[in-house]
Figure (cartoon, rainbow, N blue to C red):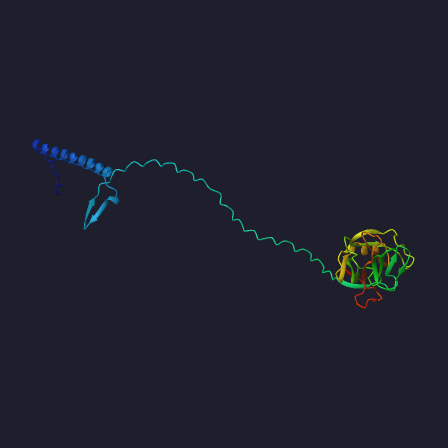
Length: 278
C-alpha cells in the first residue's frame, strides 16, 4: 500500500513579515479613503458639461461663473387702452326733396271791343248820344259823362282772370278840360239800355282810379282787374264803366273826346277791355 501524500503545515509568519503585511494593508486603506474623498470632491465640484471646451484632445474646464442675482422684475405698467375711434363715415349729402313742379300756367289774352249802342255819353240835362264819339266835359249849360259797356261772353266760364285793362283812345281835346282836373272811372251796372241809364246812378265802386289828366292824343289805360273779377263772380255778363271829371261845373266849352265802337272819329282805335286769364 502506497504511502498517502501529506500536506506540509503552513510556515508561521515571522514578526517582521507581519509588520510588512500590516503596513501594506494600512497603506491600501489610506489610498482607498483618499480615493473616495477625492472622488467625492470631484463629483460635487465637477464643472457642467457646457463649461468644458474641447481643445484638440484635451478638455479645458471653464470655471462656472457665479450667477448674478436675478433682479426682481419691475411691474410693467398696464397700458391704458384708448378706445379705437370708430371710423366716422362721411355722410352723403342728402339731396333735398325735389319740389313738386308747379304746373305751367298757360295764360291767354282776349281783347273785347265795347258794345256799340251801349257806349256813348249822358248829359246832366238828361240828353244822351250813343252813336257819336265818347265825350266828357262841359259847356255853358251842362256837363257830360262817358258810359261804356263790354260783353264778357267771350271769356270761358272756367277762366281765372289774371289781369284786365280798360283802354280808350283819346282822339280830340277842345278847350282846357284838364286844367286842374282829371278823368276818373266808376264801376257801374246800367244794364242794356244807355238812354235810360241814370247820369248820376249809384256806382258799384266809385273812383277806382284815374284814366288820364293830360290832353295828349294817345291810348289811355287803367287796370280794372278787380272789377272784372267782381262781375264774373256776380255772374254779370258785362263789365260797365262811367268816366267823369273830378270837378264838374258848367263854363266855357272844354271837352275830351275818345273813339267809340262806332269808329265815329275814324281812328280805328276802338275802346278795348284786354283780359289775361288762364
